[in-house]
Amino acid sequence: MDYLIPYGLEWANLLVRWLHLITGIAWIGASFYFVWLDNSIRPPAPGSELARKGVSGELWAVHGGGFYNPQKYLVAPAALPKELHWFKWEAYTTWLSGISLLTIVYWCNAQAMMVDKAVYDLTSWQAIGIGFGSLVLGWTVYDLLCRSPLGKHDGALGLVMFGFLTGSAWLLSQFLSGRAAYIHVGAMIGTMMVGNVLMLIIPGQRKLVAAMLAGQAPDPIHGIKAKQRSVHNNYFTLPVLFIMISNHYAMTYRHAQAWAVLAVIMAAGVLIRHFFNLRHKGRLAWQYPLAGAALLLGLAVYLAPPAPAKAAVVDPVQQFAQVEQIMRQRCVSCHAEHPSQPGFAQAPAGVVLSDATSIRQNAPRIYQQAVQLKAMPLANLTQMSEAERAIVAAWFTSGAR
Image (cartoon, rainbow, N blue to C red):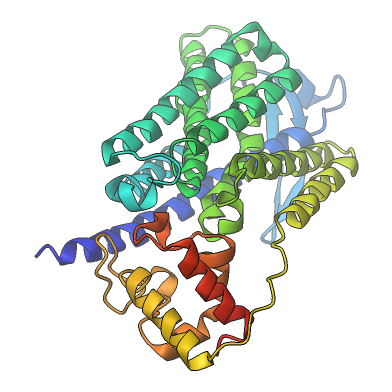
């Protein structure tokens, strides 16, 4: 029955990833909507009925064939409504499914997914310990910074947090594979985001409700603190979304300065998000998305691979025979109809390299992943040598015949 374990993990990966995507959309959608709402509402006229009710702002919207009139109270309404919706399970389920996915994909297969012996030779438990410790440390440092005097200055706090996340990416990249370092930075940010909901936003809202039920005036400080953390989550969103898909782009996490590449992409995401937040307040500040686009364009130019050297003329039959042998020795343990590499039930990305036709069809992918990026074999588990990569490069540049 052991042969069914990789197959079961593949299904667990599929279902948990699907759940993570669904709940993440719900959570991020709610975050985007409520920050937009806060930035878009307009105060009622002085002395109006809404102003007397304690409404700090309202707006009218049309969607799905209906008109909506959301209102925000300065602190709380005079009487607690019978039904009050709490936005929390979207966040909790996203984090729980994300940690489950991290466990299934990375922690349960740490030697393949987290350890790169060219970076640091770790045991599986050491790699998992570093990954788990980063989540605990990330939340602790972030929460302490928010509670410190620095937390009263949003701009300065943002710069310090950017430096902390960049430093964390650098430190993790000294021990883990680039792919694992990226995903654990993303998990750190996700843990900060759900920690904000669990530890600040929901408890603050519960205190407001408890005060109203007790006939007391709610303390507005709880709403102010919750709003600050909610805005932080909004700015975290675009960086963490990139990290969620970063495993598809080895050109980023396989770079020698992968941590700096991640820092540039995170900065671009924050700048673009800031533009939209200002836009919702009625301000057009094009310098922010233009700066973000410039960072991404500059990064694309910086990461562009050099032109391949012109290959010497060789016998194509003999050359392909060498490439085919390399594929059998270094790649087919994963990239086969039925992989023999532990932890893999299917060929990664559906790429099969067990016959001549499939090798030729995937020549550009093989060249990019094995030669340019050196992302494959994964963690170089099969020990492909530089000489073998050079043979593959020469075959591709001579026409991949």
